[in-house]
Length: 214
Image 1 (tube, rainbow, N blue to C red):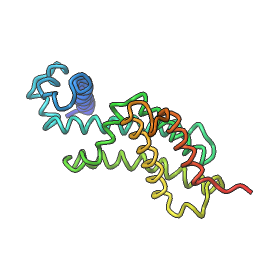
Image 2 (tube, rainbow, N blue to C red; image 1 turned 180 degrees about the horizontal axis):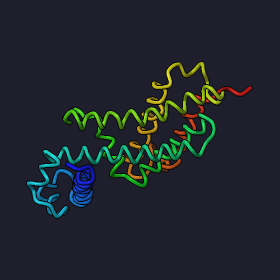
Image 3 (cartoon, rainbow, N blue to C red; image 1 turned 180 degrees about the vertical axis):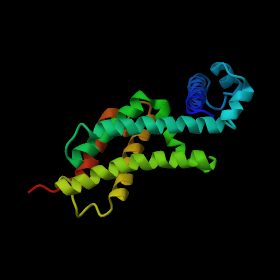
Image 4 (tube, one colour; image 1 turned 90 degrees about the horizontal axis):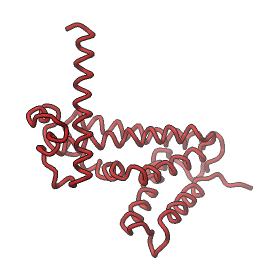
C-alpha cells in the first residue's frame, strides 16, 4: 500500500472515530448514558450499526473514548495554566484554577473523568494503556510544577517529601471540594456559595505547601 493511500485511510478512520464520539457525546447529553442505545449513536452519527461495532465493541468502550477526550482537554488546560506562571507555587495555583474552570465549562467531561478509574478496569489492553498514559501525563505536569516550586523556594521542602504524592493530595482534595459543591446544587457545605468554598479550598491547599516566610 502506498504511503499517501495509507495516510488517507488513516485519516478516514480517525474521522469516523471522531464522528462516533461526537454523536455519543450529543446523545448521552440529551438522553443520559443508561437510556442511550448503540442504535441511537449509529443513527446520530449517520453510520450503520455494523460499522459502529468495527470501531467500538460496546457502549462502554465509546464512553471510555469520551473519557480519553476529557483527559486530553484537561491536559491542554493544565499546560496552558502552567505557562501563565513563573514559580512552582503559582503554577500549581493556576492549574487548580483551570481544574475548577474545567468543571464549570465542560461538566460532562468532568463527570466522565470522575468515573475513569472504575471504567479502566473493564477496558481492553489498548484503551486501558491510553487512559493510563493520559492520567500519567496530567500527574507529570503537576509533579513538574511541584519540583520547580521546591527548586525556586516557593514550596516547603519539609512538608513535601514526595512530589507525586503531594500532587495526588492536591488534586484529590480539590476534586472532593468540587464534588461537594456539585452535590449541594450550587452551594457548598452549610450553605457557603460554591465558588467561595472552592477559592477557600485552593487557598488552604496552596498555603499548606508554601514555603514559610520569615
